[in-house]
Length: 363
Image 1 (tube, one colour):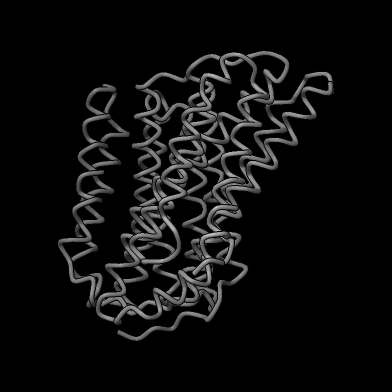
Image 2 (image 1 turned 135 degrees about the vertical axis):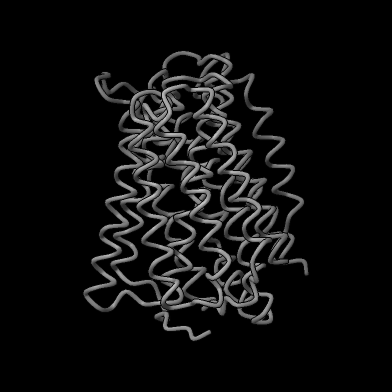
């Protein structure tokens, strides 16, 4: 299969990612407004469905560069589909389910249509599976009963998870530099949601010392999460993927940048919702569910990053596992005073970074 991808990510792809990340904003708002286990499960399900097709577009632009007007117009239509999905998220299990289904079917159809022409060998078996999952999501969005909608969307997720194992991944000849950079950019843009959450949490409140402290701590934590992902390991990830034999690269990329990045993005969503609550209640404590958002978001992010690094066989793992456990251990502090938990999380993230740097120097 030929590979036409540009060496690096185009500005059009970055623009596409900005539209996609609106779904992260919407999911963050959904989690922050309703902190029940059922809502967490629904948010996980929606992100899983959405991220599958985001990943599909990353693979698409890795194969065919969006240079000509037709491809650019089709990507614009894909953006419109993602925008419709994002707008539908707050009421996706109520009256907006149809919009979620239609938007997903649209982005799926455009993706399959472009790749069937450019990479027929790779898409011959994948396209019908994508059509099946998209049809299940559309059918779920059109039914009036929430249990049926939930069941059909879970069925779609099962098809999504199984589909990479039902078609020949060896047909994908990925450009490692482009692929790593594209996923790194979506992590950066998603982390930007935690900065937005600081402003949303502070909206309408007096600018007190406690609020400013919580806002700065939220920024420091976001910076720490950025450092953990990009502190040199983005180059190591590119080298590891480049060193993978071409016929195996698609499978490795799927596990590292697909399955492992799904919980990593969810960790950012959870963390952003926690930051929003922490800033809003900066002069008081938060409830257990809200403290779990803050500590749990960092923990999920760290464990997902361990999964990612283990697939690519890069970097240290042990300190991030310990850091995830320590992040969860900060939850009781949030029940006493929100800022205490935020300070403790800064210490946890900084300690993981420092211990890893010390371990690398000793090698």
